[in-house]
Length: 246
Ligand SMILES: [Zn+2]
Image (tube, rainbow, N blue to C red):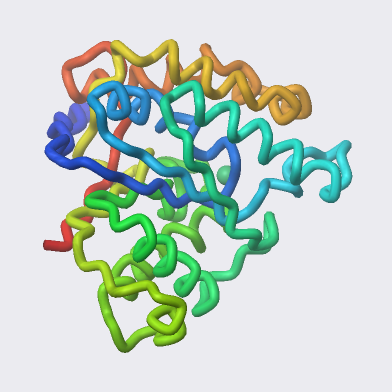
């Protein structure tokens, strides 16, 4: 029996001006997505990062009270490398993020404040394909992002946001989940690959506390980028599952 070659990826739509990336942890954008962000900021687009947690439970040898501020600082440095100046932290607890109304409301508030064309999140499927299990916070944040974006457009959902002065925003055209095993789209990151590596390398303390393949930024990102690139017809790429809203 011969194995079927995977379907080729379609290029993502790049006719937009503003994107907000909403992910669970510092480092989530850097494990794949940062090179794409570097490409977009080089095109003059604006990208904002929103981290649902500060990643304070991410380093085994470091108490969360010390770890949180350190990881926030590393994320700011990492974002700067790819042209992102605005990084916000929503302060949900790392490792035990709950899908629920408080998270949906916080995401709706972010979307109303920044009024993006595109919202990016990370893979929220059960796995990364095959047997590589996803992590609970990623799943909760991705699902809450799908819902919070639509809540942002409904005046009568989370009415306290109106009282805070945040008018509804219906302008999000698509939500993109990076590195989803169900991706059918991708963006060519060949020209911005090195910036993606440099961005991940800014997570110095985090990488020092990690072992295994994920602690080697260039090697990890080469493998990831080459796999997606082979389906887009480019050297490197980042895959996205695209959810159109309008
Ligand atoms: Zn993560």
